[in-house]
Image 1 (cartoon, one colour):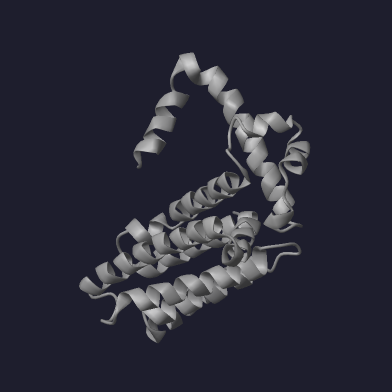
Image 2 (image 1 turned 90 degrees about the horizontal axis):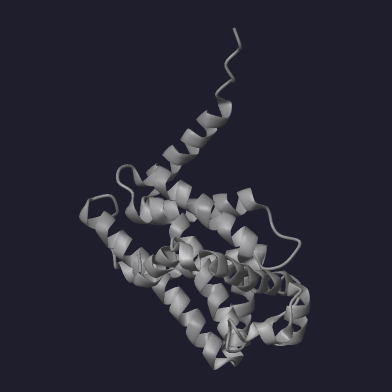
Length: 234
């Protein structure tokens, strides 16, 4: 856990700061939530502090107590979804044992996070080519996942779970595929089918990393789960 996260937890547990902190966090979260609501139907370039604070139900001046500008707000939203995705990906990144169920759990979590917060990814990725600050944020966001996936592939290669190949290009390809699909299906309303997107991403990851036999076993296991009859009540 990062030092900043530990510091946040210590402050939350401090009775002298708890009441004021809760109010401060509620206001900040209301601003972030209102920004997400706005981004479901508008691009970042149309966002203004006035419109945002009107949605949040508080004064324009309150915005600057939490964020220096709208770019800092977007950076905070992107960091938030990055934290949520890494938390959802913990089973595959850190779990031991059969990697396929761990990957299935991770992809379910990833898709769930992006189903709820997809407009953040769309807004930043769309604005990045014309906005140097958001381009840096988006590049850093992708880089963090490229490093994490590369490291995990190499660990599984060392354990004999994945065949030998250059891990980083594959990690980048998988991550860019994920980003495109998740933005395409969940970046705006109406959203795509959550289950179908999850299955598509999972199939590509399993077949790419663990091979067709692992994919066939995963498919067979999922079919078996669906066919298990419910036990009759005695």
